[in-house]
Length: 224
Length: 334
Image 1: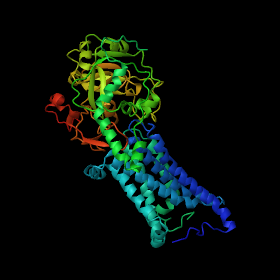
Image 2: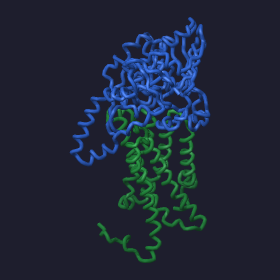
Image 3: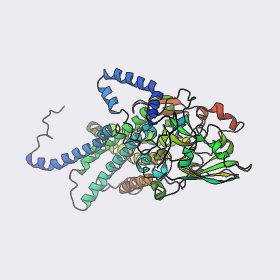
Image 4: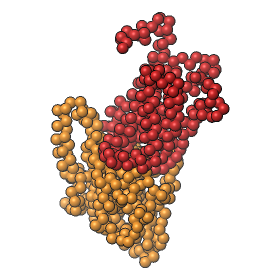
C-alpha cells in the first residue's frame, strides 16, 4: 500500500517538468472517454437519441468502444514512428493502458445495454442469441478477449505473467478484427462505414506485421 | 396548405391528445406509482427521472383530421406519439433512427398526387389533399412489429386500401399490387448518396398479393394520432399492413400499379435470404441474425422501463388473415 504522498506526487523538480505533459495527456484521455458518457445523461432525456433511444444507445456505446480500441492500437505505431524520425515519443506509450481500459469500459456498457435494455435480461433468449447468431458471437468473443486483457493489465499481473503477458496481449489483434466483423454483420444494409473501420484495423495491424509474419517473428519489432 | 372544413361533431386537435392520454391511462397511473415508490429509494429514482421520456415535439405543420374512432382497439396501449415520430426507419433520410425526424421536415407533401395504373379499367391520379377532404377517415389502432425486433401500437387514420383500389376497377389479371415511394434525390438525401441511404437502390418499392391488398385490415394511411402524417412517418400517404413486418408499410407513395406477376420488393432485392416477399410476422421463423420469437415493446415510460413480450403469429391478427395463407409453407414463403 502506497501512501498518498507517493513518488509520483513528490517528484524531483526536473522530472516534475517532464512528467507534467504525460499527466496532462492521460487526464485528457480520461476526460475525452468519460465526457460522451456524461453527455448521454443530457442527451437521452432531451430525445437526442430519438423517441426510443435503446438501439441508438447500444450503437453509440459499441462504436465508441471500437474507436477507443483503434486508438489504443494506434499508440505504439505512432510512438514508433516518432522515434524512427529521431523525435521523442514522450509520454505517448503510457496512454495505451488508459485507452485500452476505457475501451473495455465502453464495451461493457455496450454489452450491458444490450442485455438489459434490449433483451430485458431474458436469459434463455440471451443464451440462444449468443451461440446462434454469428455477429453476436463475434462481438461476445471480442468482449471476452478484452476482458482478459483488462483484468491482466494491473501491474501485479504484468509482473507475474512476464513474457507470457506480451503473448496474451496479442489477443487485441483478433479482438479488433472480431469487433469490426461484429459491426459489419450487425448492419441491415450498407458496407461503407464498417469497411472504413476494417481498413483502419488492418492498417494498424500492418504496423505490427512482424508479430504475425513468419521469418520476422524472432526479430524484435521496432518500437518495442 | 391543407384546407379542411370541419364536420359537425368531428373531434378537433384538442380532442386528439386526451384520447392518446386516455389510451395510456393505465400506464400513466402505473408510471406515477412506480415513480413515487422509487422516489423513496434516492439515487435510483434520480437516474430514472433523468431518463424519463422527452416532452412531445410541436406538431405545428400537421393538420388535425376528423375520423371515426376505432371501437375495436382491443385494449391496446398506444405508443406515445413522440416515440412513434422520433424512432423511424426511412432510409431515404438516413439509416439512423433519428435521421428521418431530423432530415425529412423539408419534404414538400402538398400538392401530392398518387398514380394508380396497370391492370385497372380506370387508371388515374388522385390528389391526396382532395382524397383526405373527400373521405371518411377511419382510425385503426394497430400493432406495428418491426423486423428488427421492436414493436409499437399506433393509432393510424386512413381508408381501406381495398375500397380505394376498387374505384379504379382492377381487371381479372390484377394478381399483385406494386407500390413505389417518391424518387427525388434533391429532397431525399439518402437517394443522393449510397452512404446516407444505406446502399439501397431507390426508389423503394413494395408489393402485396391482390387478396392481401383487398383485405379489410390493409390501410392506406393518411394520418396518425389525430392529424396528418408527419414526414418521417411517410407523409402524405403510406401503407399499413398490420400482420406484416413494418418494412412492408411503404412510405410517401407516388404510384400504385396493379400487375400480373409478383413485383420486386426493396428489402428482398437487398437480402433475399433475410427478407421475403410475404414478410408476415412469424415468431416461429427467425431472422437469420436474431430471434423473432419476442419483441421489445416501445410503450410509455423511460429508457429503463423495458418491456419485452412474445411476438404473436401474424402479429396478433391470425384470426383475420391466417386463411389467406392456408396450405402455404410459411418457413419457405417467409
